[in-house]
Amino acid sequence: MSDTTVTNEKKEPIMALQGVSKYFGGVHALEEVDFEVYPNEIVALVGDNGAGKSTLIKILAGVHQPNRGKILFRGEPVEIPSPRAAQALGIETVYQELALIETRDVPANFFLGREPTRGTSGIFVDRKKMVEDTVRTLKDLGIVLPSLRTLVRYLSGGQRQALAIGRVMPWGGKVIIMDEPTAALGVREARKVLDLVLQLKEKGCSVVVISHNMRHVFNIADRIVVLRGGKKAGDRMKSETTPDEIVKLIVGAEML
Image 1 (tube, rainbow, N blue to C red):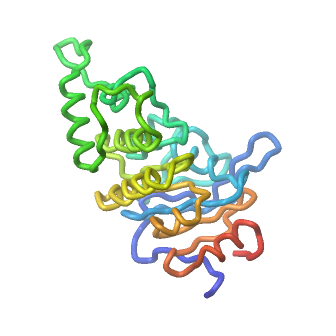
Image 2: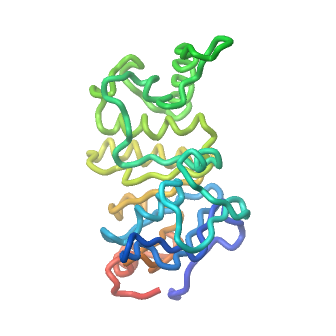
């Protein structure tokens, strides 16, 4: 196999970074990185600790702004100055920490920070709509929880992850970013989460997944992008690479 970058030439990317660099003082977290997300694909972003993965997804999510380079969304240059701006474009992020409130139930967490209101003044939370929309979305994604009234503290790790993923769907997210969605999960719960990621693709979403688990990467990804030392070390279609090659790119045994 050639060492040239493998890309999807038949489609225009829904989102792209071009020559993006990000510095934190004297630390070069990203250096001249190109990164594309194509419609209806799952991209795995892999690399060792400190490779720049978290910085890259935080630029996509509006948490960090690049020092150099361009961001394109649907082919047009954009700025993403905040997470709200990212959400307005249709970019949703599920962080490893999940940002769930353990003392609140499923619908409350499902609509956390985006509660629908009712009444002419819009000051009353529309609990009925929250419950109806939560039931519909969870059913549509095949997510089974013990009860909507269950407090998050009583949900398993996999159920929490499913809730965190499912709650991005009602907002029309077209690019969904996930940071280590199967971290600290058992085999059975990890499999359910991976199935849920595949369902998001079936529903027309593009998904960016950070993962250290090579088996999970090769189970779900269409394409694998490798970062090393803040630079892109490889871009491969899953069907044209192997776990061994990806590991070599991660550790620097094989150059782009």
